[in-house]
Image (cartoon, rainbow over all chains, first blue to last red; front, side, top):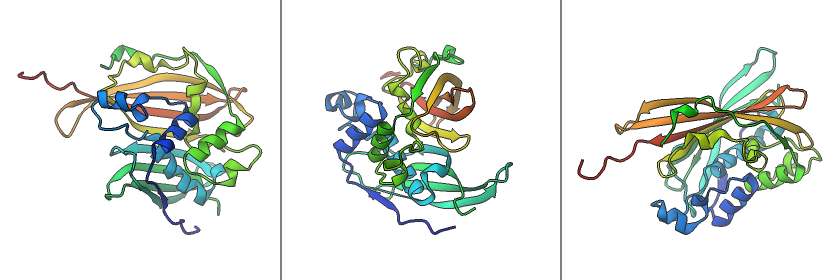
Length: 132
Length: 149
């Protein structure tokens, strides 16, 4: 296996980053950009849409192993993310194996960590191993 | 509050064309500069791109409203995409069908009941071959006890 790249550091996350993601995804849940709506729901500010940090994790991994090699991605959110947060995204190889068709696969475990050291998103991805 | 009767509810099938500009827009929004997304004439979709069914599902494609999860106590807990081969490329059309696949309860570590709901979306090519599946997991916390009770 080629060595993993340096972590992807993204931030401080701006509201424009959130709006760009929501426009690209079509998820216009207002709690992520509408200040009065977020306050009404009990938050001090709109919170960052979770699929943005989840996407950053996949970006780190596809830069390494290639967009066409992705076969599975699962993410779980563990902490809220706020505008102003800076996230560090990286991961490690959990397992190299071969599927029933003889295809070489690599399983990754990933995490996005905020500036306070808290894990905000965990990820698990499977790629076709580009090096066989 | 989650309505358990939503279990098994299905949205109407709908078609999602994979568009090159939309793939590039999504890739940029998640901080990617990879040529496989931004320069390839027929780029594969990013790992979570199929979430953009929002643009194509229409009024009846998404059965999620049937769940009636609380806006205040509900949240997106986990998300998964599985590809049966290379991720689909721009220029293809996918037939998409969503269903409420599972509703279950767990006790939280803080004592309250948590209600989990899983919605599965199948993505088939126009020959009917399953090319990808999405599983969205959301969780609703129990209502706070009324003051004084």
